[in-house]
Amino acid sequence: MTHSAQLIDGKSISAAVMDDIAAQVAKLDKKPTLAVILVGDDPASHVYVGNKIKACAKTGIQSIEKRLSETATNDDIAAVITDLNANPDVHGILLQLPLPQGLDSDRLIQMISPDKDVDGLTILNVGKLVAGLDGMVPCTPQGSLMLIKSVKQDLSGLHAVVIGRSLLFGKPMAQLLLSENCTVTTAHSKTRNLAEVCKAADIVVAAVGRPKMVKGDWIKEGAIVIDVGINRLDTGKLCGDVDFNEVSEVAGYITPVPGGVGPMTIACLMVNTLKAYNSFHKS
Ligand code: NAP
Image (tube, rainbow, N blue to C red; front, side, top):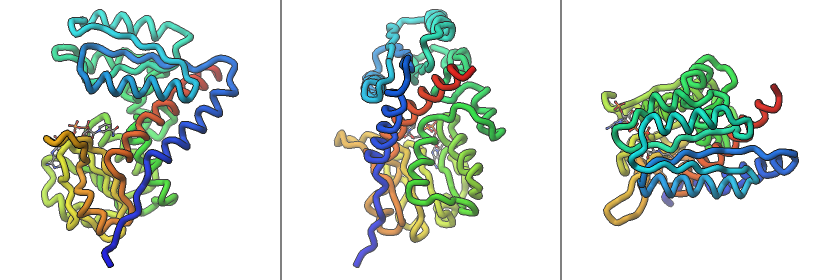
């Protein structure tokens, strides 16, 4: 009989997170509000923003969409961020990335008030994560950790390999696993013998952007495999960075694409918006 990994169902786990947020929001007098800034005409960004707005509606969080044209300047976007920062009725601000070419996304992200930075990308929130302080944790790594913990609560002493070192995902993911007492290896494009590095891991998290790169013979039997990649094949189908068919014959647990990490990202955006609201109302 061939082995088959247990599926980690991001859809149902994210639905439970969303229900929990909705229940908490329902008890509040005033509603948390998320502002999403969308610049230009990128079709994928429009879909992502649409999904975020839908998730707000489902959880009872209010949303404001600020749309700017493809020709918007850094100053135009900066003015919107400044207004939203100053607005006490706005608790979370999200600048949808990527911005059209020529715009300075790094500078603009850093303008977002750290208290409202629901993507966790401002330097203060990055620093808090590294320092082990309570702050805004980026949504995709936060959701990926929830998926891992849905199948194994105590990660202490496990060897985790994160493939990818972006500020958006790889670095915060490694930091979260370190705070769970994993022994963490961060792999990237210069890593030698990546297959061997992965083979030693109890947890492999792949966030590269290369379809089906992680193969079955890279994985230790029984390992937890989290596939963050979203790649569109020529056929139009979505696939992850993990060769699902091969890896699911070896791994203990695996996330599908779609239906794994993706829905967790949106659920964690709701978590962060409620968190921003709660800290605003505490102070
Ligand atoms: P990124 O900024 O492009 O980073 C990719 C990382 O992969 C880099 O650190 C790069 O190494 C590394 N890499 C590239 N080729 C490699 C190779 N051959 N071997 C090992 N490492 C390699 O991408 P990202 O923003 O982190 O996103 C990664 C993937 O996750 C993408 O497919 C993206 O669509 C997906 N994603 C999904 C969600 C979600 O909600 N599910 C959210 C965010 C991202 P260097 O640093 O050396 O260049």
